[in-house]
Image (cartoon, rainbow, N blue to C red; front, side):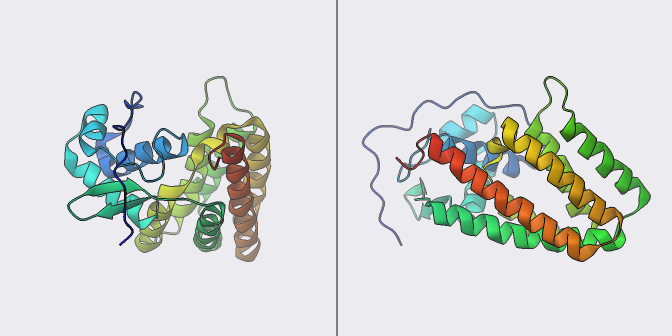
Length: 231
């Protein structure tokens, strides 16, 4: 077990929590804590104040504990018995490895989607691509991106695959998807993936999905680098 030094200062006051669906509190809390880490609000080695997180989100401590277990599996936090959860060190190679693993699983989902895609899901994919290409003022690009991938991941009908993808998504730095440069690249890549799925070309769908996720990971790393995340 890695030794942790409790920081000399208390955890900073938490920012206001975004609105979220209460149907899956664990995922919502995990996303909130993940964003605190990637924003630099929580530093490596710093203890996560579970009471403060629960209060900020207006939830009990149970979903906070469940979220921290999920984040430990994603190597974002380390839980020390009787001491609590601490932000884990995170290197550029850690990020790259995670995105490559995520890409491999997403590729399986895309290949399977190409073999079972029905007309209604094809229509939904086309609509998702169109929204990404021509977003309206106020559109949440991260949410639009997530919707596209959720359609593909759900279409395969594998609960096990879905569970693995949800777990891996805990370490995804979604904010990079909101940049204008990546938004344009992602929209083009989404269109290519959707076309491969619609034509039932599983091999092409898997290859294009792998490229999309891996390149997205490099863009996320570059954005964190620009923000001084590793300074």
